[in-house]
Image (cartoon, rainbow, N blue to C red; front, side, top):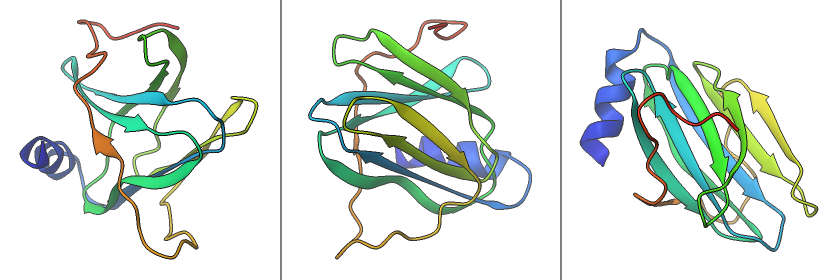
Length: 128
């Protein structure tokens, strides 16, 4: 997993990238990051949590954030800014994406999203 992430960021041109996810809903979600060449990697987003997918990685990201339910039903798909950003899920399940380098957030300690192979994307990705 780490080698895949490093390869995706180093292959991209310059800059730095971070992605923070906040889930204020009582529902678990899955996040797949779909990148060029039909590759993807994913994370579990537990209910009522704020955590990082990655932080201050060298390079930029070129891809899409795909939010899914635990049974792999698409919720939404958003183009990621090359510097990352933040994905926020409010208590009602409404999603917003803030683009740009995600600065450290005010939490007692950084938390990290757990990697998950669940809901791997088919060739060509998912169209919600």
